[in-house]
Structure formats: structure tokens, C-alpha cells
Length: 218
Ligand code: A2P
Image (cartoon, rainbow, N blue to C red; front, side):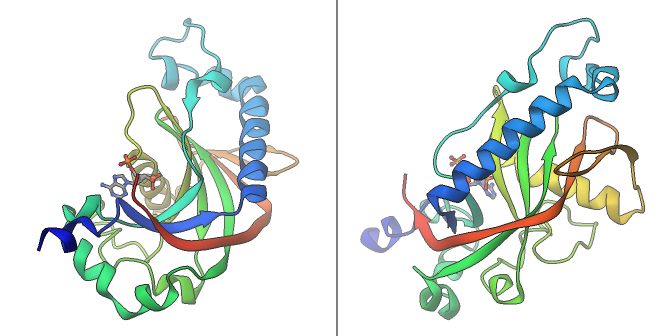
């Protein structure tokens, strides 16, 4: 009935604790600050501006909104495929409201999005929807959880869903053995450029913090 339909959320996911949100945002700010000062980045600026001469401030380029989280299933209040089935899974019901530790292993920047790559544990993978990678990259055959991320910001006019798609492109290139141009050993980790405006910072020390598995209604 209609009641049942409205009971499905916009999405399910892990919601990062406030301290970790602050920490990630500040890491991302530092990352952008460092990146925009690098010669190599300036040489590839046209990925972002379309024309090399144009001025742009990387630190103003992305807009973030809302609570930082790692989406598991986008339900769109039940309109998304498989939303009801996901919500009804026993493990989703059992683990609803539970706290686990989320691990961020890398930060990435593209002309569209700024995100953090999340490495899921076996236990967390039980809450990961089976089709998440397939629906976006049907031919890539990527491991479950490859798309797991936290969106930190999007460029103007870019939809949130893009962050996961950008991450999948990055993971695909890395899987194809594309190691990219090793750019710099930064304090936070190793920075590589994969081409097409894709920048990845693999954190020296992955950062972990508690997060609550829950849903968001908007
Ligand atoms: P993300 O997980 O990358 O942050 P919106 O505000 O656009 O409705 O999105 C709500 C949340 O659901 C966001 O966190 C967003 O992206 C995620 N999301 C939006 N659309 C999709 C989609 N088609 N597939 C997976 N996740 C989505």
C-alpha cells in the first residue's frame, strides 16, 4: 500500500561520526591546497577548465552538502530498482542502527567530483548491494564494493551519483595495470595522475572511524 511505499528512504548508508566528517573535510581541503600548487597539476589544468589559460580556484571548485556518508543502496523512496528487496534483507534489518568502523584508503579528484575511497570489511560487504558495480560498469567485472565512497564535493551542475562513477573509472584503470604518472610523495600519501583529469592520493595511513548504518529520508 501507499504507506509501505513511503516508508522506503532516499538511501541507506554509513553515516560518519561528526569528528570524522570534520577530519575528512580538512584532509580534503589540505589535499586541494597542495594539488593546486603543484606544477604537474597546473600542466593538466585544462582537464578542469577546458582551456589552459582560464583562471580557476580548485578550493572553490567543489561544493559539498549534507552529512558525509557512504551510500550502500540508493532507494529513491522505492523508485530505484531493487530498493524494496534491499530494505527487506535480513542483514539490513539486523544491522540497522549499528556502528562499525569505516576505512578511507584514498582521496580522489576529477573535473566533476571530490571523493574518498572506502575499503569495506567482509562484514560491511554483506550490506553492499550485489548490482552496484555491474549497473554502472557492466563489462568491467570489478570486485564488490569497488564503488564504495564518500562524496566530499561536486563541481557546479554535477549530480551526486557521479562520484561513484568516477571512482569506478579510476578502479578500472588501476585494474588494467594503469599505474598512472607517479607525481609526488606527499605527507598524506602517494599522488598519481591517471590521465583525463583523474587524480588519486593513496593515503599512507588509511583513516578509520565509527559510522552508523542507517537511512536518510531527506
Ligand atoms: P553519493 O553516494 O555519491 O554521495 P541525491 O541527493 O542526489 O538524491 O542523492 C542522495 C544520495 O544518494 C547521495 O549520497 C548520492 O551520491 C546517492 N545517489 C544518488 N543517485 C544515485 C544513484 N543513481 N546510484 C547510487 N547512488 C546514488
